[in-house]
Length: 234
Ligand SMILES: Nc1ncnc2c1ncn2[C@@H]1O[C@H](COP(=O)(O)OP(=O)(O)O)[C@@H](O)[C@H]1O
Ligand SMILES: [Mg+2]
Image (tube, rainbow, N blue to C red; front, side, top):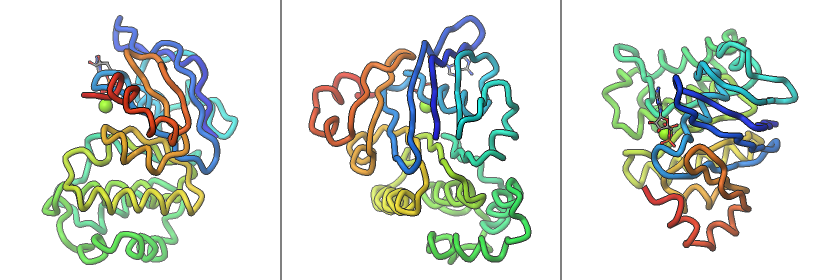
């Protein structure tokens, strides 16, 4: 579904990603792990069209993404939950969700989509008319995820969704990712909670200093604490 081949990315003269190759098959959950500063966010932003200077190949459903503007990439069935959640202040939960629906061509099915989201995210259902930024950080993150799934994407890219969130909500969030996987969604997950991420993943890649240093089945990596210690300790 997503095939990255020899991706390079630069910020000014800093060469951040160096010949990164990675793929995610339809229906897979793949974790992208690595220390702070390894280049995980840069990789996701490169896929979404948010890094100005990139080279190599990023194909999604067989279509070359590099060179396409960001808004065109969303239209192909990609959704992105950024590190910073971008919940809009002054808007209710429902209004924030509407932004996700508007971003797709499904605006006319709004009632149906809101109903489906409310069934999946009971915490949001109770708070549809509450101002979104008055919710806890974890609830806002759930909203960011709900908003990203509102367009019924084929693939979701999640950048450190559990960061700064209390454990009970992290469990709920990962149960939700497992459910999205059962529904056939494809997921690329960047996480610092390595064990939690591996537990729901099929495979994982480790990025270190802008290069892939390790690629393995998730269960194999889970059984290898030395690798996690070496490349994933913050
Ligand atoms: N907008 C930017 N301009 C310049 N350098 C950046 C920018 N964003 C990130 N970097 C640098 O790129 C490297 C990779 O960062 P990032 O992709 O955010 O890593 P990670 O998400 O793995 O923590 C780091 O050295 C970081 O300082
Ligand atoms: Mg990051």
